[in-house]
Image (tube, rainbow, N blue to C red; front, side, top):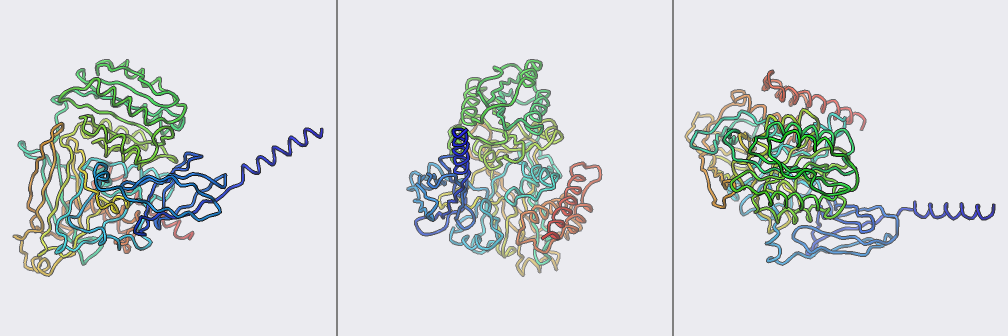
Length: 587
């Protein structure tokens, strides 16, 4: 009896010690004393990943007083630091030398020529700045007339926002990427002339959320490819079947999604299936697209279980794609996952390095995100950008049908690579400008060696880039005098054809074709409603005076009743209004 009592006492003491929690607090700065946001922190004992916040500080729960933390960030040496929960941790990160950093430059979504990083420091101040993305601010045209942005077909942000709102949950500001929200609707697609790969048009009007300013719309369209004349595809389905995928909105949804894709395969296409979970392996060796029954059987037999060894899965999938590489064909890995990599490479920097090795292989990477809770949007986004590919989020079967059936060629066939657009504003008409969306990660902006990286553009893509403009007196006078011969900006589109290294470009003169907002096309008006919605969800300081009813009215007046996506958008805004107003009242 006494022995049993001592045993029980020992177990209780052991459990109480194990349950004891410690709190490791600290800060991370560079050698100049500047705080570093979004530094990746790996807790060695648990393998959990954390990040520094807005002020460069962190707080980590630990179950032992001492631990080792690893600090890493693009452009800096990785450091391992032994920490004690009783002591405040101060980490000073040292920059990589220029030669080493050059080989691993941080990539930007947008970049203003000659704008010094010191000039952007004031952007970091205030409660509206977040640890991951930093919203673009107004820039003086006379000093910095040239700005650029990477173009792509990514549209994951919108369906992810829809998932949060449908779950009656507030949307994390960093989940909102306005350029992807606009991409989602493929607004007012206009096919380029037969001899052209792209078509660019522009419009200028008054800004619906700021009567003193104007809104510039740059509408970009890519050529629509004929599926029958497309080259053969060599596809590798890389599917996460780990334990975290064992939910109806994860692996079962993906199985349904891939079944849809198989219906679009032609006899000359080929498919292999690689899975990773408890075991990483080739579930289906490369077969012709004609063998649909065999492909569907392999998809149906997938079952979830085990860890998430994303690194080994990616390496194996690229190896299979290389072994069956089709010269002048469409070679692509399609990664489907919730992004919760917990074996092998885990951090964004490590995944960045892994996928960058395959960047020039001629193999594209399409990423499909699923799930909730442990869904790692930033990791999947890193992979798709580094893999010369695109990124979509599947929150339901309807979205899977849209991405993999209705938009099959846009998702899987590139018409151009490394696409980015330079806009050179005319200071006579534009006093200041602000790019809406295309926001950069804070860490990327802090790195003086970071550069803009173009994206992949798929078949039949329509994209709108929006700029909020502070007009000059000449601009205002031109409106009053109905003068339309002025020029707002010069636009240069730069790109490469798939599989080629030659840099090509198209030039476009952006005329001062001012129209009152109510005279604009419905597509332009609707895009403004989408941008307002995203800005309010991001809690942007530039749309403080916008209310939900203003967004709803604009969306209702500019949408087409026959357009199901636009009708759904109006319902989503209404749901967001109810959700956010309820939270506001509670506060």
